[in-house]
Image (tube, rainbow, N blue to C red; front, side):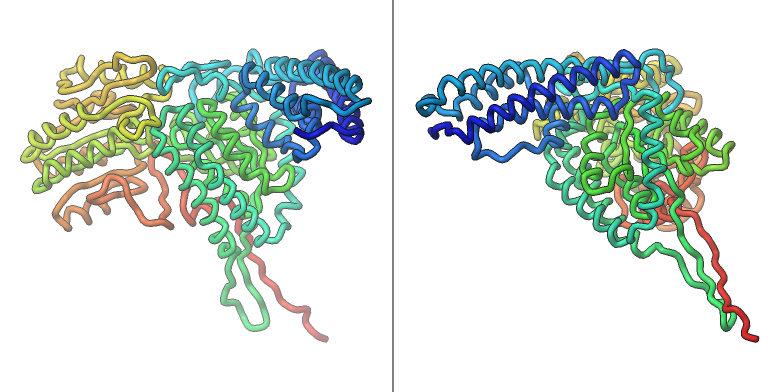
Length: 614
């Protein structure tokens, strides 16, 4: 125990006075903002900072040996994981105990009076904090869903259990107001020139620093994704690590993509400059949010653009946490995050200051984005839905083929952009392959995503489960045979059984529309040529997999399949540094790899000659 001396008493008294000022100032700001209808994110941040500072100052100054708290980190943690009432009581009790039970002579009465005031003010500050969280961060009413990475305009908490737990605290931030989105765009536009002229080495260094911060927070970020979408924790950790790698990769490649010189005439210089486009709007999905966001954000930032980012409303907390890792390493206004549904995305896409929209999400949203952006002369990169086929040739080992199909169809419950969504099996190996596929499907173990023995995760929410059920039910009604699965699991949450369907035909939704669930729809083919024709018949063109022992067939598939990525004898795989353009309804523009940097810049040719001498 240490005694509380006069210096500590004066510090406590000052903190009490400052705390009173902060609480009163917070209350005034809350009242003014609410009465004037200006519940913007900027006002909310200011008010929350005042409230937290009031609590933080009062609590921590009782022990003069303790360093002051990092208010910015406290703010983010408390937004994502608000402390329970019991935790708050324990914190106050712990702070009081640190003061010592026997104050020095002559200061005891003053100390206890100050302590009472501190506790009362702290309680008031926390009350203000709670009111502000409800009042200022609640969803904006009356905003219709237009487009975005999700498809719902529903606001407030959603119960999306991994093991039947509520996701309300993490992903109920709600829609940014129109004025908040305007402020974000104005900030990005205002920071544009300074960031454009920042030394490229400094921009790259900021991304490397951000990559370090992401790696420091791997467990936290993995937990957020696990809680929001149900993804297996080991896969969520790997996803975070990939995001850090992408930040570092962009930092390296960004220094090499500065333009090129041309072979001009003697006495002249000709170069092509790669210049940033300006303000970039980045709209990212929920199913694999960390790599998707990290790749687009890093490419935009390292090339000198400023960014306004809207993560999916289905995993807002994960998007905010990743952006926080980057924002700590960047100047004000260079990266801003707005939250909400398609209405918020619409405001970004329509704004004349946004010169490029980078979107990963649904095909419907991507088509509308391209239409709106094209009409005003801006550019768009869109990676949208897929209906990826796997074509299994004669002569392939049936057990290995089943393992590859299961990996592609059931990983993350089929909720990956390049999940296997159509299966074409050569008749000669179909029976043995399907038999092993059913065995694998029935061996998958649902459960807590943090349990290493769990091998099946839930679907993101009831809305997605309804889509999967509709596709499977329609296929069965049209003659498909369900060998296993075909229904939701009897457990709390949005769980759907791994499903194997045979006898599928081209008129079924499971063979034509993106299902995004743990479903393997199988169609037998009697020849390689028939299988290849069916595999390339979809309007989507994201990726495709071919399993074949025949090199000629492999090369033919690479040439004939109209998709961005062809994988031969491996359903997942590929070397770093690859790039691809999706085809058809799957989008337009290179969304990953080194060629993504080219999408983020505008080229300018410069010809220079000296003034002729007289």
